[in-house]
Picture 1: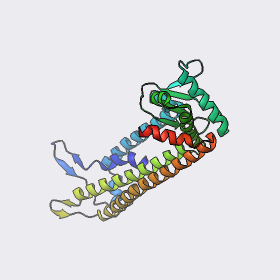
Picture 2: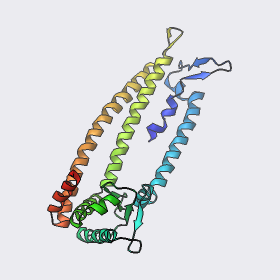
Picture 3: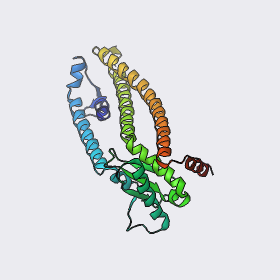
Picture 4: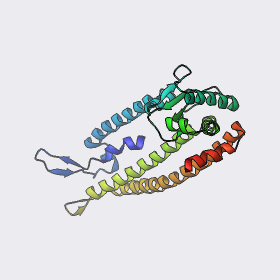
Length: 263
């Protein structure tokens, strides 16, 4: 996030004079001359503003826990009083059964009425703030045993802390991508300021080394972390299925569920 916020520092490649001419940045003072130049001080203000906006946006998104995420997706809190159909009451019964089997408190249930597709999710960084969301299509099309398998699967994600793990992996990937972009922008700046009037200007070798370092680490780390995330996600899904079999004590529900999804 910090690397992403600092990108505006490197977007300023020239200073425009009153006549409209583009004057290259003078880097004769070396790398410190660049970082303390007037144009980069202005860029720092923009970077800090972006960082603060991103931070407050993060707080707003996660301050409500899983409930805030589910509501942002169009979910409706489902309670005994608001359950209007037999399928909705059956869903609440299944959630209570799986909570008892998993040995945890019953989480709030959010129903996505506008989604006719078959899907379910767990949201929230801690078991105390976690909720379970499920689409209308899943509630209407799954049998009771299939619904048990899906809900038990989501309970496993909550108990194993998979949501927090996914957030950390996503942050790592984004940070490495921003590092790559910083290196890319530094290389672009170096190509603009290395020569002025056909003559080589000094002080750019340090920037070139840093730019190449950021570029290579960010690029390689970005692709490596994506592969790592895919491998971790696959293993966590296997673990969730295994835990769901333990909670439901019925492996046939998964065969039925996969058969329904295939159809």
